[in-house]
Length: 89
Image (cartoon, rainbow, N blue to C red; front, side, top):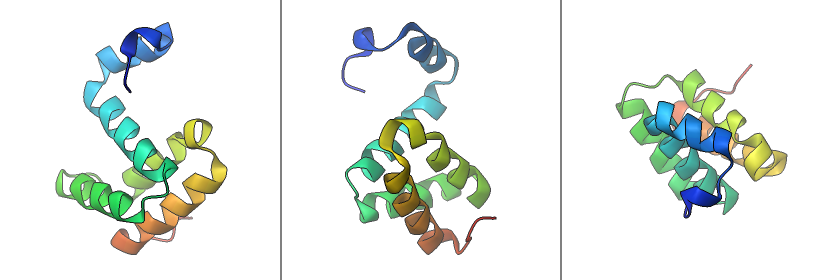
């Protein structure tokens, strides 16, 4: 996110507590929100290489629903599936 001072207090607190998670969620949310299939593929591969499970990657995408909207999340989940082969539950 561009200006941390404009972010709600709870968001800033989460970012301090879980900086890696929030940075990854922000990056994935931005990639999915602009409907960048290649970027979501890349972030998925990097997350898996860092040790995340396919289910954890899916969960991170789903967590972005309120930020990027349901249609973008559904598109991003299909792109995650392209890389993981997982189709969700």
